[in-house]
Image (cartoon, rainbow, N blue to C red; front, side, top):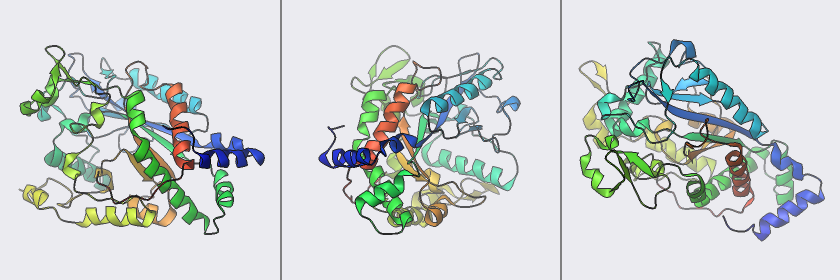
Length: 377
């Protein structure tokens, strides 16, 4: 990240002159932390989601991501990142106490897997929403394979302090409705995150190596790596293989042109991808032999299938699509998705990293942002 620009220094000076600099630290910080359950044999757990952890469909803090074995722990947002980390630690301790001999893998890239068939897809019961969540994941398996979906990471959720918005708008001399100013500021922030996001991978990337089993059924990819030992491959200068072409940077979506210039353009281009049929996915079929294989045969089944390092988010109402929630109520927070699990910390992240990420998000908010061409995933 470069030295603070003259524009940021001027803005910080004007906030200080008004005694309003403390507003910068009042943003809300939340975490979503994924971890793969591993059985006593060192392999991915084939057991159902533990009953003691509650319902994966409805529990607000403990659920599953793609796989039945891929736990996702969620914190509420807090102003003090120390409170966010303490909450995650409490949830972590509860989960560990109820794993019945299993452990949580401390790394982002999966180990203990043996090809796609070893990775169970998460199930959420027979309700309509539970069935939809399962079919969506089944569609991901047909489209991209299951192995990629077993990768774990941390999502850092950040919302700008509500009391800071009118101050920033006044300092900018912007007379538009507040929601329009906020939406544009958030998208400027997102464009800066995309521009400077390499720094997060450089400083905190923690997946330079990968288990050989990751390539079971795709052995031709092994030649791209160097061998560390009989079980481990690596890239000499890698920091985050999780965010590379073999990880969550999905080459299948390389043709998408999602715009981050404005809320309207983002919703329009993402909605278009969800509504556009894909010949490749049509060949998979939607319902074959009376069983669903995917929700639909479009470029994206739903919004969450768009893999990107950052997403604008709004809390959805029951049955509401994320794009509609954004269109109606604007952006509530930004989700930074490029954080690897740190194997050096029990919860996968520590307070120093959280404080840096908060400062990074503020920098990206305050730094003037250029508009960009529509970008691919």
